[in-house]
Length: 307
Image: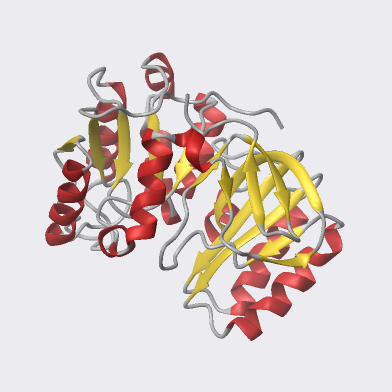
């Protein structure tokens, strides 16, 4: 797996667009997130349909066409330096085929941030644009608004990425060892759902795969992991990083599933690595070469996430 193109870091005064590719966004949380961004000396602009609600499907932030148009316009606007997702939920998969990927590629690289349902877009940006993206807190997310560590790690990644080349949340080895590869991944259930589509990689060969999820019972996690195994995504993977499993039941029930499905890969696996749907989540860049030390619980990037 090859490393991807790194966008430029942000500077004070940079314009950042906030979009809602998935679920509906609470206005008060959006305003709080915009205040945080302004406090970083950024110039946030809100896409026209961020606060929309779909008339028939209340789990969507407006129509597919409007959500896709917002993302497309923000990405192709030469005045915008970064596109930040407001929240996850569900819906990113529905807009992937509506985006003009050639136009987005022509618009050039810029920073893209999100997680959870945004996993579908992380994969699409990697496959269609060959671009490094940031798996990190979202502008209207509760953790982003309330947790200083989550805010500061994202801020450092955006403005001074050389200061956060080593990510050390204190994870523990599920399978000990060291590995080197290109980071990728996200929400387990989204990776399973995307497998086999034109916007997803067929294999994590040569990669360090990051996995987390929320609200999935252990048997559902088993099903998703089994799908990744049977579908070939885990063929040739070099290491696995496991984040949070919020709302998936007691961890003593989740851990045996992870060990059973991933322990036989013959690669290092680190657990409780502190990214995803958890308090104080770390920002993980996808598409960069890095070294995993499962015993030490560290991920060290070969180069800063952003140029």
